[in-house]
Image 1 (tube, helix red, strand yellow):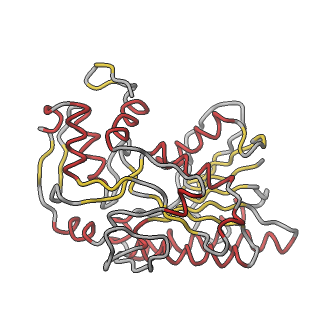
Image 2 (cartoon, one colour):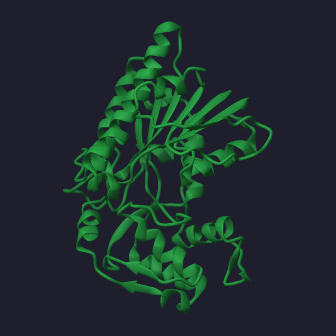
Image 3 (cartoon, rainbow, N blue to C red):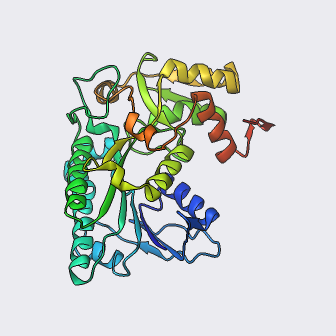
Length: 333
């Protein structure tokens, strides 16, 4: 099996590639190669499976065609400009998030005209496709009403994925990821970045800024769960999806206050003391229009599994990113 991962240098991409290399197989098939593509060439992961590294902007004419030239059996499309950056740079957001996806779908369609070709395409969408007015619990058939450019771009891509799948050009499945926390590394330009920052920074003794009230509720999944969603989507029998090719993933509905309480249970009051409330009306306005909880009934019935508590999400971060230690002391989950 040949696999192409677009957006392989990102956090979720790296987690996914690590899981693929560790398993060596997917759906009972041996993985023969994993091409890792991103706008900046991903780091070489090592291991026995060949992993060609490609630096490429998917939105540039001809790039998508080159990426699918060797006809990968499975494509993970994770590349995107995140929410805050897509809102700040309108043209860049549409070029990367929409035009890049359209270029990829067209490249696959045209490859299939030369010889039969219909790869599995797993696309990472977002809960940002939904916006107010919102029910307290969003069901599987709620109308798309995005209130950001990022959400609009993802919603359009969901429609494209469904249509190209209906026409038999790709075997697509779109997974709407919850906000991923705790994200390792440096903060990015996502408006949701503080949800990770108020956990990540205090765990290593650094101050963190909280730009919204602690009553704000949001929908979360860990990086480990996100990689699991992608792997499950890659092997799922898509006949069970019918024409509804996009799914909201399981997650946890948690308030900022509940996040902080979980942090205190795991790392103590000294960690919580490092969180500083500095209101940011721009971020607060963006977050206010986001969904807060999903039923995710279809996804759960199809075997997708999320995290069980926010405390578990924190413990996953400690185990996977901090070597199981907080402030030099070992912790276990």
